[in-house]
Length: 117
Image 1: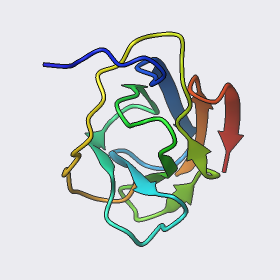
Image 2: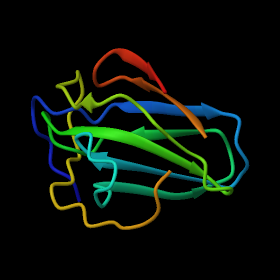
Image 3: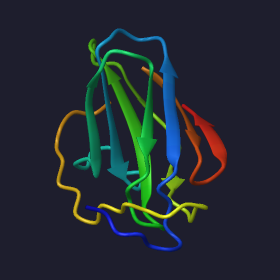
Image 4: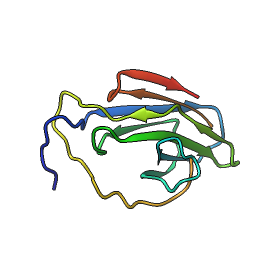
């Protein structure tokens, strides 16, 4: 169950990448610490995009990591969750684990910016 909280985004963000070899492994790591355990792991993906409904608290910083099946890894620039126009389903205790995650770009509805790595 999720609670509505003003000031925290639950808006969808399209994360997309090109090239590489499927399957892909997509995750978010805290800040710019690409060696850290993920704060969010989206698991194994066959396509080259994923729509994520933001469920991290406002102010959370992260880097998107995409890894393909050959081990090639790409990183986005650091992103920050900002307030959105919607209400939220914030997950404040993410304990998901998994792999790192070709060439990545992220269209961030939370920041209104596009980042390419």
